[in-house]
Image (cartoon, rainbow, N blue to C red; front, side, top):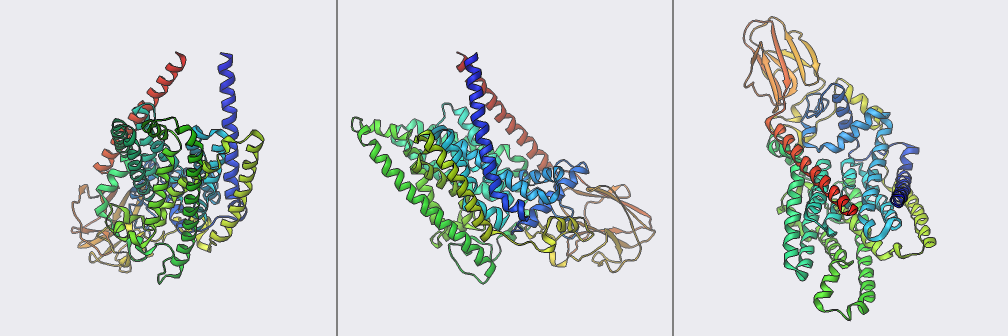
Length: 594
């Protein structure tokens, strides 16, 4: 009993120090943001608006927000239905807990910290605590991560980078039981889809590429193992999709109701962002040049370290393999660094090809690949491969205790230098309206914020949407602009998604509500629900008032059947995963006690 307690205390101490070290490294990576304020990158406004909207609706009692009420100049859009929830829920929770100007910095630190922990989780079984901690620090501060954090402020992708090492660990490391493998595959797949859709697409194709390579490796040793691996990966992926159904089912079912193709208009298509390509947009070319330089350095370093690892393994195993049969050699390589080296090398080659013009037809025809917009988004997965290959080349786990402290100190210095360099090249200056304070003012103002093209309902035209406009007005026709106001109307809000409108005594007019028509919204006039209303170019509700008033119009939102079905499927998926994890823990404990 005493020995078990001492071992547990020793383990807890090692883990605590590793977590503190990674937390300090993440703090170094965000230190410029702490000292000089936020970097207002490309997606800064978009994400902060989501966080403000989510936190505001939570205060109003809406647990799972769907509709963004401040978007489209207060006409709204179903942005929170189509954007994965973990990202904006995390930001919304931080908004409730911290001053809003500190939320972007806290979100960035949290994402980098989690990335360091998951990379440590990937490396620790093979390299030990010290080397795994160093690898986690290198991963969280790699150039592409800083590029995403400072230049692009793509907070969803930044948080999704924390789940990518978990997916690699499930793909590359053999497990004693199929149940454990299923759980370890399904969880990162679900987390990726619930955090960032482009990162989930990257993870899916990465899983396919490396999974095929692992199957070939296993085929050399034992066909039954190959079949078991393929079935496990496929079943784990399907279970992950099931757990993410709360987002996937309504997003897929309602996809045709929004202008999703606007996400890949001219300038945002993958074949316009290959390495060092030039377009008519100087700003796009500048960002592309930054991403291209990062990609070349990362791919080159991954290739060189792969060669170093291969040469070292050939030298070390030459004597070991001399007394083995060919079958024994293949089996040995399935559990050695060869099992990691070949999938990583093939994946690096695949990423290089996808960044070159020769892959144009692949981008045009592969399912959902075009919605990545930028080919260099594959670097979120390639950074995991590059980090693993680097640690295999360095092998700090084989160093003496004194020599192990040197790379940790050097790692902190490297992170500090990398952060200063990234802050200099990637940091974006904030304009007056782009600061957290300015975004709060815009979100809560009468005007609201601009619409997002890809989340605009198909029946609506953003160019026809005027602003500022009142909450509701009366017009002589369904297309009446807000300037033609015949009488005042009274609007009473019970909740953001439930309000009442009282109209004066007038016949033959139309009530125009500053709300875009979409699934889930229900309009009840004088106690009778309206099945259809006249169409407007801007997509707003135009409610006919054919009889003498006064009239009372109630507008409220009810979750659609696909949302309830997706939620139930997701709850069932997570219940299955929880049961698998609990059973695996119980079995491990039982074997340990025996």
